[in-house]
Amino acid sequence: MKVINLHQPFEQNKIPAGKVVLAMGFFDGVHRGHQAVIAKARQRANELKLPLAVLTYDHHPSIVYTTTNQQQTYLSTLPRKLELLEQQGVDLTYVVSFTSALSELAPQQFVDDYLVRFHVAAAVAGFDHTYGPKETATMDKLIGYAQGRFEVIVVDSANDENIKISSTRIRETLDDGQIIAANKLFGYQYQTTGLVVHGEARGRTLGFPTANIDWPINEQIPHIGVYTVQLKIGDHWYNGMASIGHNVTFGDARPKTLEINLFDFNQAIYGENVVVRWISWLRDEVKYTTVENLVLQLKQDEIDSRTIFKNQK
Image (tube, rainbow, N blue to C red; front, side, top):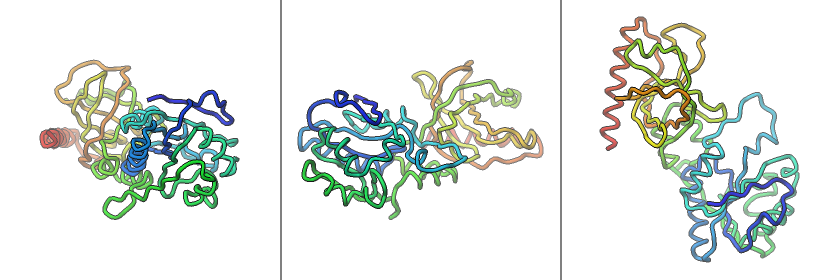
């Protein structure tokens, strides 16, 4: 998949010649709703014998439009989003930097400056996609802005249990720790990244050594609790269980950490860039009265996790 990064205003010589079918969206998470849009675009591209292109953005538009004290987090950072788009069979992705200059474009100007200059034969997006002010830059108005220069294809909502699949819904599901439900909405098992760093090494004294994961602040991790996970180190995936929490058994007001115990594993992996694949929620974080009770629970967590992996196979 070819990736072209653009900044407003962009130079026309960066745009390949030839018509394309273009899917539009921010595509955070590239979940099943997004996949439906891309699949529709792929279908039309195949019919027209044209490449499939995607128009997306390097960060969320809300950064330009709103003021907030909260860190913006993503279901898929840009590298992960590009990886997922390539898995969907996209040939070309335009990554546009969402800036104040871009946000000030009127809908007609955006269509003229971007869609037309991208040589779009057909533009495809979800029914609620906007490309400017939500009052005027709607999909039902895009046909007028197109002025017959390209086809407009609107994709209906993709639903699960009669509720729209959306990035917002998935975020709420992750915030509740409902990993299996979130993975169903994603259409794949959720992944985050991180760096293995030194921790307190307490897990080793308990018989459950852990890899402490320093995760990027712009990636959304699930709710506090204990989970069945896999960890990718290099090219290999290893089964294990993860704890997100504050280690409340050992004191109050402790920092939030992500620690992963890998099964049948005994290697030093400090400094490794890793990927966490979230499989299933096991339980909430609990403050135990004794270390012995914590160890008993960890043994049960391992039994439960191994059973989950066995049943998956």
